[in-house]
Image (cartoon, rainbow, N blue to C red):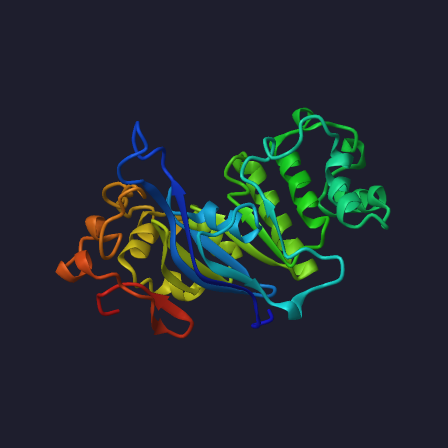
Length: 314
């Protein structure tokens, strides 16, 4: 894995306006704080897992990285040294495999379309057929539409479409959560093989810690729009520092600890309309102190390549 940063996310924030200020347009405008000064780097060839509860901002960050939405503040910078002729910076594999595909198009058209638009000099049909073979789609499916295929087959089409422009970074947003368990392993194995074969980096967004542990070189933990811990995978599971990370790992089912009591994270994630002051996690943290309620903890190094945003001593 190349350690040179492929993508640098620099103090990126995202806010959404939540309705009108009032019936006459007066009063204070309300905003959803989806991302709050996120900074991280993704190296070329790296698989970075991004984990957090629903509403933590994971998907929003993914959409900003592929350019589907602009940030409200900050910058996303792709390193020019990693550019490849005819390649795109980033492409996305969406959570809903069927809903992310055009229902009127056939499989071959879906995969060939981005090639026709961005690389018109190439034989789009030939490239699309090669991509179908690469992701394990039988040639007989070329003329089918999304509703005529299974969820796993549709997700393979989505992956092939994302690979059509030879991206430097693949953003996978919960790519297996809508699939049957029996199909999930096939898609995960496919992503791992493609990453090894193509050398592209992957941002793997999920709430499933065991899945992320299996695929990722490093893992970033998000909570209510902020990165609270980031570390190499072995270090994160071997010595989690942030109380939220500790709670997530404790609540994840593991075959080697069948008799362990189930201790979920207490409480519910606060509304991003009115995020808590100080550390966003303090209302749910069993170790919260007065400083946590008033002062935002910054990410600090607690080990080699391991950072955590917590006032407690590691």
